[in-house]
Length: 380
Image 1 (cartoon, rainbow, N blue to C red):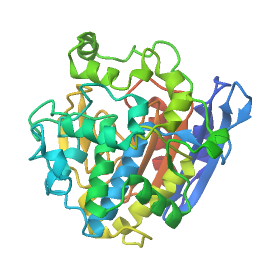
Image 2: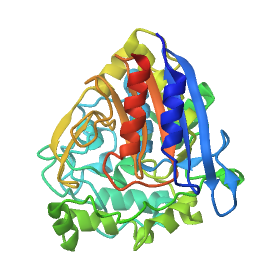
Image 3: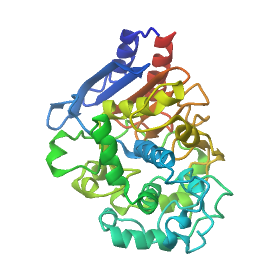
Image 4: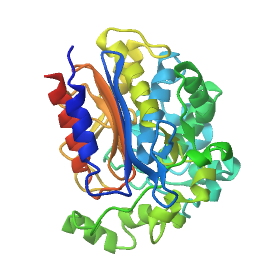
């Protein structure tokens, strides 16, 4: 398959035009080969540090795609059944009206577990015993399975305990296995010895709420709404999340769905490995049957949190009107706050990851759309 590398490189570089403080990384695999792996701009404008192949950036919700990869790994090993109740693995989970919640409902954002009533300070996430007790005590926002509602922060920690009860290994150990097999360097939080490599994220330009619908704005204005409770769930992110995202506390925390650090090449490589069996190829860790289960759509509808359409497989996002992350219904991936994207389209034969330091304000940032369109066009 031919691929016009220059076309994609030019489009990616253009996303930083007029923004001298920003940086970004993009890696694209086509038919199993890394055809583009480049960085642009600055990783830290305050320090004048360039964005390089060694830069690690917080990937936020793109970490949910890594959670999905771990789920697929355990399904392939016969250790995790998507249709089984979570409580069949983790007995304590079955309290507070959660006994019937299945693995599928939990990982596809149908469980109604979007926040903790007593909030989830960053320090709590590093105290495994206290965090487990808080997760167990939480009741669902709605009857599980009746609605779809994106869980930005808590779903990764629920998954961590589920994986440990199902396999004997928590997310951190399973992530280490993936890193060792693939030669990647993904982290939950950031070890002290790696912090000099961290990029500094930048606030979205202009009015970050300009694209918020009146319905969503009204929901945020209600202190008792799901939206407000999610907003308050991690107190350190108020009133401004940018200092928290760049701070030391986020690097000490354990939020698999929200505070992983990686480079674009790490996630692109991961998605290539996940996509290969679906194209009839081989993977070091995953098999085709498990990936077909893990990437199949399980929920679609108007999301109770963002009030627009979303669609999910087992923790992977699927293409939807709000997140048009691919042109094929077999595609899967996950975006991250600020305009990053990691995904694979097994029908088109590519996988990619794009990570900019400058945040955007739209659900699906115009820069994401530009990169994705350029990659599809480069395959024509």
